[in-house]
Structures are given as structure tokens and as C-alpha cells.
Image (cartoon, rainbow, N blue to C red; front, top):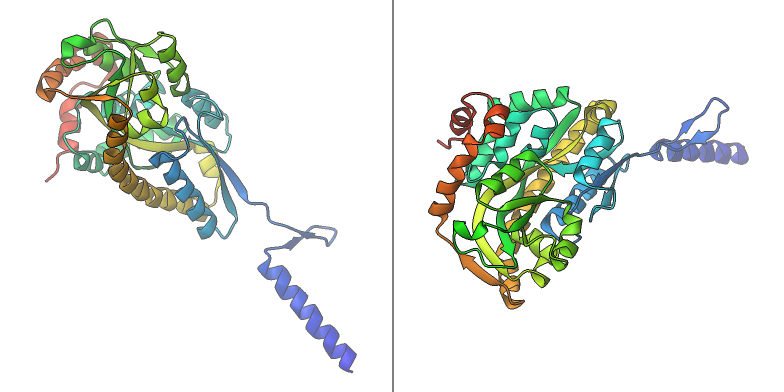
Length: 341
């Protein structure tokens, strides 16, 4: 009798253990473990940058909220390839997420999103946050999904983009003759071209060597990215031109996103937004610290007359390729959508 009671108790404990382990039975009656959904996030930034730390926070939150049924694997420093290669992978249905901006989406069939990277479009970060809450933005997201891409989160500050060069840029005319690295998209190429420089598209990971070898004369990026890429070792003049207030988005393929359950989709999006807030706190904190580090490493920091740079940038909207790309009246539409009451 005692043995029978012990057997019943032991059987019950095993059943409870199996339940909490998330196990199931295959047709042969054998226990099977539930495999987590594994998502790869690849990006060009280096370990320790705010964006990288924000991604680690995203991964932690997703694993916690999903009780381990979702897992994010992290690949900084272009380990999975450049941005365009990653977007091609997600369009092919792979479980991949990467960082991308309006300028890249313009090249992927939603041209009006490129205006988000137009020089001096935003006067404040609040204008950017107002824009991503607007009906215009929602409409653009719908168009992007039709192209196979799903924005997961858009509240991440990438930083205010400045220019670091091997020759000083103290006024707009100093850009003439300088080969400046830009990401490989039409908006940023034309944005640098209108300032008088020669834009030279290349992956971020190639910039250091290209500066060393004289292939380029400078690059533009937020301070934390400039420092994380060790650009200050091969270029010593930093111009605080702040030509783009760069908020960024994290994107995956709609095919992959639609393969997730509604609960998994919610976890991925909500945790991405929370990690974005964390990233923004780090960006604000580290920008001032990074500027001090750059000065300490021998970089001359140049403050310029922003008004003169803004005036030069107005010609951006008259460039034939840009006029042909954007919808009529787009600047006014976006200006209204980003207006902060």
C-alpha cells in the first residue's frame, strides 16, 4: 500500500515537472523540448557604443518576457555583412534584424521616407518623435510593409551627425575637394554633395583603412560612432555641423514577422521600444563624454556658423534626382507632421 502511494506521488511529480519544463510528447510518446525562436541582429557599430548596449538590453528583455522561448543573437561590427546585404537576407525570409534609416528605405521602394535624412530637417528631437507618431509616418510604414520590410521600433537616437576630416572644415567652402565617406544611399550621397564635398559611399568597417590610405579625407557620423570606430586616430579635425538629427529604426522582413505569434510580435516590439529609451539615455550621457575623449586624443573641435551650413543645404530639395524622388509638396507635408504643439 505504501509502495503504491509512493508510486502515485512520484508519477504526479514527474508530470508536473514535464509541464513546467514546457515539454511535449512526440507521436512515439517521447518527451520533446520546445525550441526557442532564434533571431539574429546584425549591425555595423562596434561593441560598447550606445546602440550596441541598447541591443544587449533588447535581447535581455526579450528572453525574460518570453520565458526563454525567444532568443536574440547579437552580431556587431558588420559580422553578418553590411546593411544592404542584411536587408537582402531579411527579404529572403531569414530571421534577421538590422538598423536602417529613411535613406535606405528610399532606395528600397519607399522614396518619401528619405526626407527623414535630409540635411537640417529637424530642429529638435521632439520634432522627430512627433513625426513617428503622425498619420504620414503610419502610411509610410504600410508602404514599406508592402515592400517586404517591417519596422519594429523607431524611437532610437543614433545621434547628431557631425563631420571628422584630415583637413579642417571651418566654413562650408572648405568642403570643396574633400572626399567624405557616406553610407551607400542616394539621400546621403546627395546631402554631402550639396555641401560641396565629394561623397564616397563605403561600409563603416572600411573607413579606418580608407582614411589611413588616403582613399577618403573624412567621414560623418555621431560622436559615439566616430569614437567607436577609432576614426580620431587617423583624422584630427572634428566639425560640429550637426547636419542630421539621426533617429534610427530596427527592421526585419514581413515574412519573418508574420511567422511569429501575436504574443511574440508584441514582445519583440515592446522590448525594442524599451531598449530604445535606454539607448537614448546612454546617447545623451556618452555624447558629452565622447567629445571630451576626442579632445584628449588630440582632435581639434571646430564650432561653425550653422546658419551658413543650413543655407547651403537648402539647395538639396532642388537637386533633380531628389525632386524626381519625392512626392510633390513632401517638405510641407512633413513639416506639418513634425510640428510640435
